Length: 378
Image (cartoon, rainbow, N blue to C red):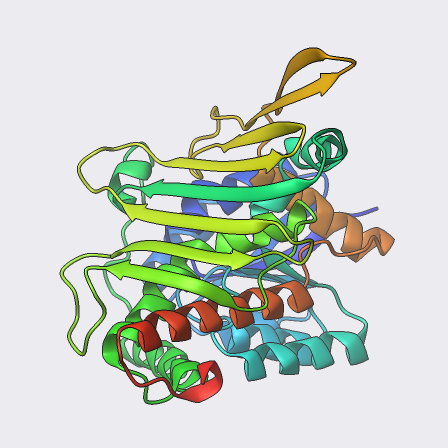
């Protein structure tokens, strides 16, 4: 089949460092025909570096209205609901980076649009597509009754993670486009968190939707599900009515659907330039350790270690993912869904489950600090 003709909306870090190079790697499946960014000069520069006749614009409406475009990649900051909905209404398939949207109402609308149109709507929670995920799910059957799942993230500054990427700068963003995007995202945050205290709103929008959402998507990909509620959430420094100088340390405990305890620890470590993410699944007869790679490093690979016992003999097996990154795998899956009708693994219903769990986490943290909670989170 001919490559899928795509429009790319948002040409910042994730686009330049990850998706545009991967679309070129998968040139037999995709061809970029339209690019968009609030910076018109950046859009023109990117278009000029791509093969073929590529249109450039600063208005996403131009992309979804382009009859050549079959699918839209939504890679902008903030909530993606407005652009995703516009693309679906225009008859385009959609791949949207996480978070798909900031409010549950937004995501429900997108689910309805995708369902009634029959169009593909895939969310960019790429960790689910790592090569070792299937092996990890299989290994869960070898460690007895699952007791505890520990998720630990050590998050450095964003800058140190992509210092190897030569970004094309966005020098002239259109003020109207930037303001409209921010206003839309703010309105969706109002929908999600209402008149919650500022610290709770920022915890939700900046940290939970910015990073922790990946951990929930990973838990779902492993077949573990998500907590219906949280038994304990500690945030340090404590949440309040003012903006904190840096992201907080988070410890959250909940119960997974199968009865295992989830212990989630997210930590901001700005002075050590190395991303670290570990999922440890502890069973009655063994343990599984999943070490995930840094997100922007193509040569980093996930490693799965399975420790089990059989007939009194201890076994330790190590599985390493291949060099095809999860980012490439998710685009391969998107192409298969668009062209062949393959099921969408990272769909909008999963995104809805993630957002609901994160709103519950933020609400639990706020109530523990004696703060008001509003919106959907209440």
